[in-house]
Image (cartoon, rainbow, N blue to C red; front, side, top):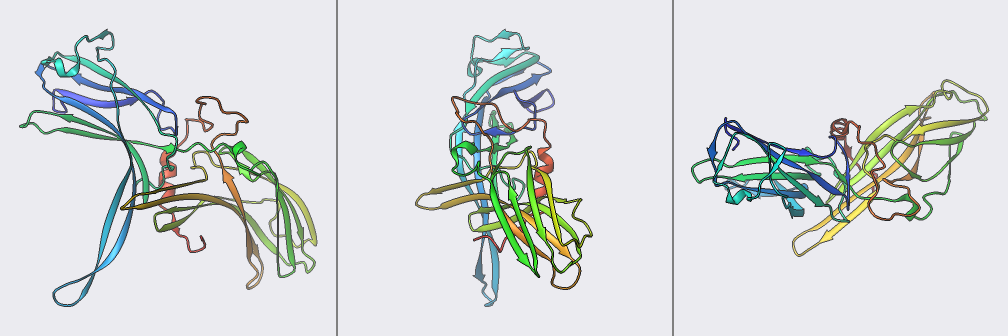
Amino acid sequence: MGNNSTSINIVLDRVQPTVYYTAEVISGEVQFTVSENIPTTDSIHLVLKGTVGYTTIHQHRMQNGQANRVTNRHDICILRQQVRFGQMTYAGHQRMKSGFSDMTSFEPGQYTYPFSIRLPDLLPPTLHPNEYPFVRYQLELLVEKKWYVANTYLEYPLRIYPRVNLHHIPNSQCSVKFDTEHNDVIVKGVLQRSGLMPGETTTFSLDIFNPLHLMIKRMDICLIQRYEIAQFRRRLEIIRVPVPQLTNFDDQHVETTCPFTVPIGISPTYYFERQDDRYDIRVRVKYDIRFEVKAKGFFTNFDLQIPVIIGTHSELHTDGIHQSAIPTSIDLNAIDQLEFQATDDNEQA
């Protein structure tokens, strides 16, 4: 299997890419196609694996006395579940009475192994999966063969988020008042709710006092993600939008409203911690909405930050498994590419 006469693949039931939530069931099929009659004593193993990865640096002194910086990579397994297969089918029609281990040969055709696995309730969200530091989930498929034939190994990445129901978080449905003052410019405002859902459009009410008629060139609204993996703290600007009605003005008083749409596909606010004898793993994700005011002159720019909570669900009652609150037709590859722009966060406590 995996040579010129066979091919193997994992096909999930949901349209990919998608987001899976904790306590949901991941289901699909392992499919392999045989183009000619081949003998087999193979066995197939499918594992769901979750890993938190980070690096540490230590000084290593060489024989000549010089110090050399050595980077150690740490891949900590936080989830490992063996996936159980259902009964094999041949050519998508006939169910095989014998199990895989009982077969002595494969005839030409397509064979499928259905599988399903339920996710645990408590897991950190997928973060920065393509490089350290990261939180990464994947299905690992291993096809063991005879000793003189190389094994086949496949990895299938998954994006998994914890369930964060905003109705279970105190004050997430309350409005948020904010204000700041700089160079006699006073900005006051109200955010409809502190708890927000991806894809939701919320509204800011802004009240700006500018008694000295300082020229305000522009005002931007940014959604900032701050995440912590082990000792690494990163900051990522998810989105930046200008307030179009607040451009090049010096009015003494301005009242306005501004809509803001939360991007789809981002991970929720969450804190995860696991300790054992060897490791203390912490993963934290939190968000701020940041107002940046660009004014004419030197040292006139200023900003203010409003903590917000990003959820995944917003039901008053949760009974059983609910469908994802985030649509499945989202460009998660764009989310992964955006995460390459994360920088060290010196502001995070």
